[in-house]
Image (cartoon, rainbow, N blue to C red; front, side, top):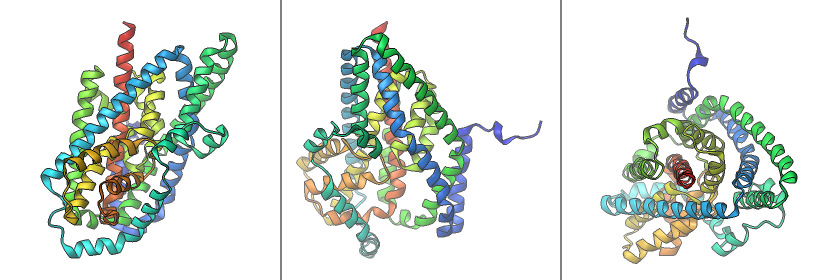
Length: 414
């Protein structure tokens, strides 16, 4: 029998697409952006089904629990787990940044060039910071005044609230009336999953186009310029991802970490290429089913995590804040470091699971501890690539959390 392309596993095709994208971006430079629309179409196709997938699967998951107390218990466990892992992540970032001091010794000419090239982009980010609601407003806005608007605008916190409240309502009404509604949405859920499968057939081409565009636009020169800072961030992400998550999956989830990473590799590649936790949601929820995580848990934990759990972003914020402070010669005491931890945890709530959202939350952290906000311009050159890396860490953390919560709840049944 001859070699046939369709026999290659999907994750291998996606990885090949990623490698080809890097090569095309390096060879053709800016001209590689001509194929970016292919990646954009793939990204839009995946993003298109995020809201209906989260709403329907989370509502069905809540209704299947059949017990409001169980929902509260799962919610509390998930929230505690996310807070603990976020604190650990940013602590890892702070320890590495304080130890390796990536901000010391940056050439003044390089600093001036970075300001010149990225100051305008930084100003746009700071303007968005002024529009960001306060923590109280975020909590109040979780309850939508217009459900249709919440769904059409894709406000994930509001969508999650709607799904939970409708799911709870289905457990409270008579079973003979709830069953037809559940069966209908169960059929809708199956149709959505089929759309995910269709979209994933385009994944190798979408990943190739997105990566080629990024490499072609930014190249590797800027990464080399800020090599020490980039290495500290990426090293911290790798250290955290494959130590903390592996331990969580192994000890708390009672699952072989190698089996876990084998199962979720497709979601990891999609997260890396799209830089979007939201766009990776459908694939992530599908992947954890391969290691036995029930939809009633994954449909709650992973969408919630994509909205409020940003381990990779928190770690990046710790390194970036110290990096910029070191460049300006601003000393950071213990109180400042603790403030960074607190602000990174709080700013994760409601942070959009879209590319470069971390810049906005970083600005909040810098503002709180008195570091010049214009210093953000110094790191924007490498932010796109680092965003791809931290998004991968974010989504792995969410999938690991679903394994932990699933095992915790299943143990109660034994």
